[in-house]
Image (cartoon, rainbow, N blue to C red):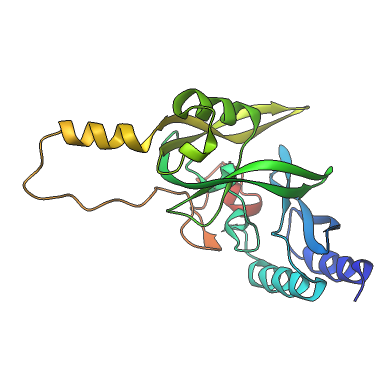
Length: 232
């Protein structure tokens, strides 16, 4: 199998999913990924790439299985699909509620997108397999709260929210780090807090989606009923 054949097969499957089209199949150091443009609502679109795969057959199988599962569904949060590796703003609540997660690791990874490949700093979390690609704004916010040494970020509690950001002519939702508390400071604060008689169970992050490919609430009457239930 060659790249052009895989791209043709993926493109043919993608046209059956409204608002989704294949930009290209990327190749880097013997690994392959599919790059899509997704239009969650008519007012904006964004690039979205699959995880890297060691061969074209594995990439093709992953993508075609996912697209077959979601085609024809208007209320599926495609950003939650397992074939996509990174967090997207569409996965977080769009009503202002924050999501707090614990940093597991920080590393550099090569990611791909509509403009090509680039090395980015990536944050992984304990509560969710999807990772956060750090842009300059979020990297600076974490460095201010946790220090410049990323090896010391492990265990920190990070509060994430969604804000509208101007990108070219479009205004798109973007993940923003609202606060971060180092693991050592969390331990100190807990030691100063009186112990409760009955420990409260930990709550799961309040994501807008629930699962690898999941339904989200349909929009109210009069709201945009476009792809993915009008996710913002």
